[in-house]
Length: 427
Ligand SMILES: Cc1cc2nc3c(=O)[nH]c(=O)nc-3n(C[C@H](O)[C@H](O)[C@H](O)COP(=O)(O)OP(=O)(O)OC[C@H]3O[C@@H](n4cnc5c(N)ncnc54)[C@H](O)[C@@H]3O)c2cc1C
Image (cartoon, rainbow, N blue to C red; front, side, top):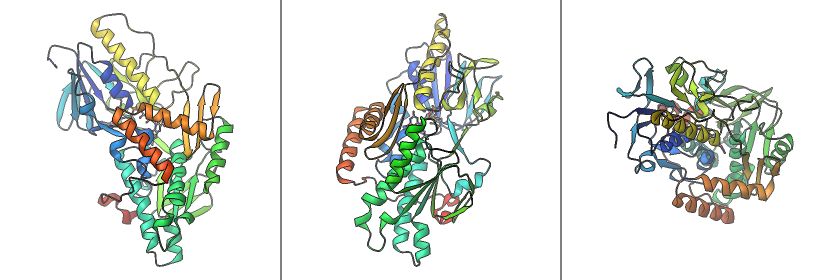
């Protein structure tokens, strides 16, 4: 139970980092307040499957309250943090103040449009379940509208799908969308042939999946091209509007654009006036505290720290979880007045990305996997990291069914978008 006499730990963000930190404090003599603006913890690695109708939102998200329901010292708050008073040691959310003795910032990142925030209206990014539902709606509506299009030009525009960014999210989205267009939809339409949809990945850098070795990038490129995906490399997008994009010197008319390019850190650094790196992430000490504030920690995607070889830690789930686990041990040691653990050490297990059915790239140490074996490994790893037996079984069964039938079980167009992001604004 929470008591007023025990140290108070406030954690902002119940993503991979914040949730792991909260769970790591289960046995500490502390009261833990976990604040998130969403009521659920989201498994972002499978969001692209929600966006392409392979999985439903509930397959990749869990209520935070339910995850922590048995942790008596955890108090869950649904609320958006707007400010932190570092002098009074108060977190402000939804007009309520939450005092803290220790504060963990785990607010992740958001999309960066490289100074063109107005592009967000035309090219939604993929970070939350809401984003995934918006993208799913736009993808599916494009085919519906193409079926009724009055001119060849308009039909072609509706069947052009542009994905900006050739990192894992862009590659995964492109491969999944190619399967939807070529395998799932063809027999369902009468006037259009969904197989003729153009799926175009535009990447500013010279290769896809830049964090993988060049041979795996080349594999991903040829696998996507085999699936009929067009890939433009070394081609920055210079314009994005309601009718399409300009990439290099090429204008591409497209009704659906998805942004999978840049990320920007959350405003957490502003709240505490902390020093940040160029991406806006909070620079932290080797024990993940914020310089000048031994009581404040920053972890996960919103933190900036280098590994033993001086490279910045990657913005991936295992890094956030390891940091969450580490700060829990530091805070627990301080409360118990035992010696602090050694400085944080990140262990990189590997990189994985799937391209589509029977195609994935995996790099674990010196081992590289591609093709069916890579895809199998990717599938097992992702099922393993889902929360709860029910979700693991359900997702595994859904994938098996989709694999055998090419069907997409979550192919529903739901929820009108908000007026600011209305579909008419994008068409
Ligand atoms: C589409 C996609 C695919 C990915 N695929 C992979 C993958 O295959 N493998 C992999 O390892 N990593 C993957 N990642 C990266 C991985 O998801 C992140 O590195 C990880 O989520 C970072 O964890 P975090 O705790 O720092 O932040 P997050 O998990 O993003 O959590 C941040 C939390 O903070 C909350 N929050 C933010 N601001 C506020 C506020 N003001 N008030 C209250 N709450 C707030 C948010 O609601 C959110 O719940 C992917 C990411 C995306 C977007």
